[in-house]
Length: 447
Image (cartoon, rainbow, N blue to C red; front, side, top):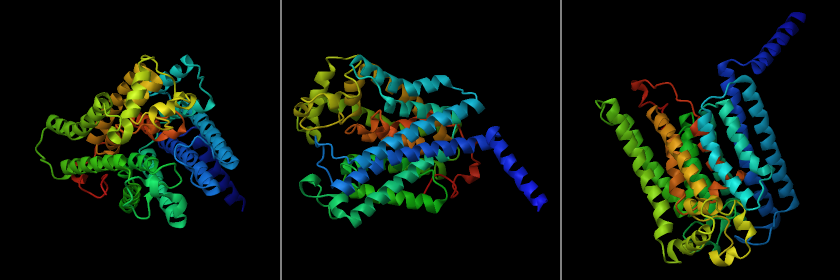
């Protein structure tokens, strides 16, 4: 008995020593698990308070001025935010203790747009609170932990979980999970109504699903990948969110071309030719999306254009001109009671990422965000060339939803599906080269 107890004790001490002084493999596993924990907490923070609200008080009117969040939902949100920040701080301290940070210039690139937005807040009398620290601390934790590719795949899994929660709510309580009547607008073709789940609108759910879709391609094993992608796509179709559906279509087309390049393209291409071909397959949809982001709000003069977004863009661009360098700060939409009349509704974002960032952070933020996108594009190209297309596909999805939406770039945890994946991609280590004969196997990022 004493021999067994001694062996068990040694085993416990050995495992504890690996946590205190981990080998590289253990350190990567711990870093990945920690970042996945942050993603799960962010998902809980965004989803569960709204689920509590809708179950207790019913579906609130979209963009209503009345705050109907019950005390239980508010407490749950605050506790989850505190847990997120606490875990991010612990992970940062652990990573700094056991790993020396590298590529710090790239970390600065990731943090710079967030810092510029909060600087705009300070200039406009909106000092950042503790909640504003959540995303920057999480990005620093990602940087020092160097998580593996499983952290990105977790975004896809959470997207499937979102789809399941939304569809279950629609089946069990269709009066809560679906938008019907006037709320559905001219999209009444959907079964029973538009799928919104616990979120304020079906477009919000559509954004979450579209941004999660690219990371579903990195899930192992194959059966789990196919189930994840199917759940996300079925729920996305049910939302009737045309912007997000278009983004998903472009992602699927891009993935199809990338797969064809790896399995059916010419094998005799030179390395330079292959890189140029890859740049074209990914670069064309990105350039088209950037053109839409820039030109649509600048050239649209009809207030009713793009489902009344023309009016929103005109009003916000005229107000941005008052503070072109720094904008009006991240709380501008909430602090301007007269803004709703100018925009034609109580909106919390600019319905276009360029217009939104100009409004809240000015030209400084737009330039820094463009530099971040360029850095992420370069990293995603290297990853795609090594057989990991998810990051490049995410960039495609992000830009294709951003020409008509902007709620996903919030600097609170509501924007975690933008800022955390961007940080993960910028931090991602390049995988070891994949043997040529394995490129058509079931182990690749294809469903």
